[in-house]
Image (cartoon, rainbow, N blue to C red; front, side, top):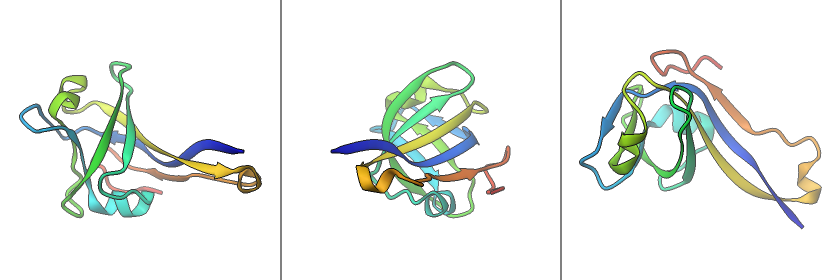
Length: 116
C-alpha cells in the first residue's frame, strides 16, 4: 500500500505578483524551487493565509534570487500582492518509507529569501 505525504513545503512566502493574463500556474524563484526540491510543471497546492483559499496549480521556474512568487491566470484571482502563502507538493510513498520520513521544508522571509 502507498500513502500520500507532503514532499515539499515553502512556508510563509509572500505573493509578489498576480497576473491574470497568463494561461495559469505559479511562477516561483528558482533558488526556492531548488531548496524545496520542486521541479517545473510539478503539481502544488497554494494555501493563502490571508483569505483562506486553497488552489491547485503547477510550478513555472522564475528567475533565480528574484524572490518571485507570482499567481498566474485563474490563480491570480485567489490572492493579492502581499498575501502570505504556503506552497505544498505531495508524493506517494510505500509503507516501509513512512517511518522517520520528513518533508523538505523551506522557510522564507518577507522578501522570499530563504531563512532555513
